Amino acid sequence: MSLDASVRLSLGVLDLDMALAIEEGEVVALLGPNGAGKTTLLRAMAGLVPLRAGHVHLDGKVLEDVATRAFVPTEQRSIGVVFQDYLLFPHLSVLENVAFGLRSRGTGRRVAAEKAVNWLQRVGLGSYAQAKPAELSGGQRQRVALARALAPDPRLLLLDEPLAALDVTTRAEVRRDLKHHLASFPGLRLVVTHDPIEAAALADRLIVMEQGRLVQAGTTAEVTAHPRSRYVADLVGVNLFRGRARHDVITLADGGSLTTVGTEDGDVFAVVHPRTVALYRTRPDGTPRNVWEGRAVDLDLHGDRVRVRLAGSPSIVAEVTPAAIRELGLDRGDSVWISVKATEIDIYPA
Amino acid sequence: MRRQSVPIVVAGLATVGVAFFILPLLGLVLRAPWGSAARSLTEPETLEALRLSLVASLSATGVALVLGVPGSWLDSTFGITLPFTTAGVVMAETFVAMPFLILTVEAGLRSMDRRYEEAARTLGASRWRVLTRVTLPLIGPSLFAGAVLCWARALGEFGATITFAGNFPGITQTMPLAVYLLLETNQEASFILSLVLLLISLLVLIGLRHRWLGSA
Image 1 (cartoon, each protein chain N blue to C red):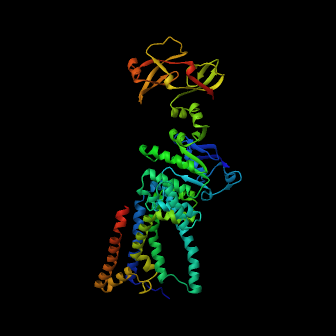
Image 2: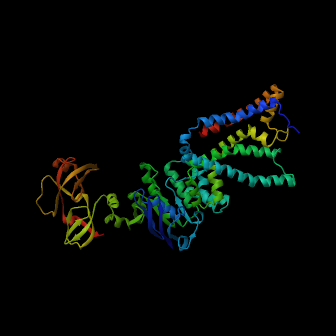
Image 3: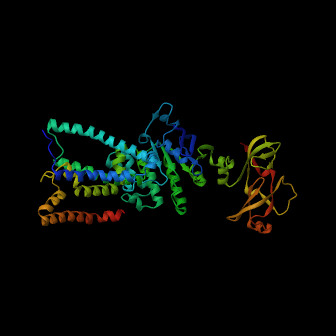
């Protein structure tokens, strides 16, 4: 039993065309930059945005199918949503918020209140039952929103940027709590996020989307090891190149070439970790197969390392120690020789 | 039979009366820039205004026909009548005061975050439950402010009441009508009545000051 959705719709400049499946027991993260259409996809599954084409099936039951004009309205779908800014009803108490879904689905007043209190205790807010949402901290509100979405016992739980509204100091703690609560929820779970750390921490499987399209899907390890888009590469912090390999030479799409070892011919991605990029004041004569000249565009201190953005053919990011920068006397705008060993380039088919 | 002669005074007054129509018309005709008349008349704004005037007035006539004919039929057949009854007063005041409520509530709805309604629907709430448990409470302050404005407007309503419902003590004579009547017969008493109206308004204002100051 699972979720199977195929969503095609247009909304403003967004043109969404995504297929999505969630299997029993899985926590899936939908990762993508702002404006990729993540929230719209989530809203479409909840029935808040109509599809132009496609379907949404939950446990084999048709929630929406454009071909057969089937449509189950939002209020009859067994889907719980935690909204980005939680949308707790400001005029109701915390208890009434959590009991709202149960009452809406016909549970009696007393039973609903008992269950709501139970849920509040589970998220550690038992003593806040009579408080109004405005009296709670951001992290507490998030937990109320989670309890409210889970109380009616939905089959599918959708979380839209559940940590985005929190400040950095509380985020790690709330993330740990959220992971714990997600683990104890037996249904299907989908977390929408633009934060790769959040995605990696909460989910078993990542689905990366950009501009309304699927870019990459797989476990966190698979996705980070073999990025298939600039967005993912930037998130992971590696240099990603795309080009055509022929006899161990990759001609890059954006100019320049890289020499590798033992590569099959064809369209490929090449990943170079910034730590393996070496910099020289003068042209080095040694074993490295890839040597070219570039210009330092930007120097940026990251912890105990300096990330140097280099313009050239190809452009690349190098990561070196501050001591190395001093020895090189490197400054913004300076020319520098770049070298990458052929064995340090990770190649996989595009 | 000789034609009945018109008294000279009547003729003079009639001439003056006709002059009231003729002179402004003459003035307009003389001052109108006839050279650019065609252009002014075919300008998009003019045509648009003309079109709107015709559409609105014809629609109003249509609505009056649809609602008014059954109304007069009710009156002539069953003796059910709205004018000159207390129900007529209520209708006249509703007609005049309702826009105040509609405008305020509409502004409230527009400034409300409609995603709360979506959140309620994901929790299984029917349309009716969304309306009563989420939408109306959330626009509560606007609803209340609109109701108070509406009430204040209706309380002081004069023109529509006296035109549509008349001025019968105990049936259609509201305070403003009573004040108007007394103003002509017993000025002192009319002052007292006016004061009562003012006092009611003042008490309401004082009673609601927290609501307004608080929710502003």
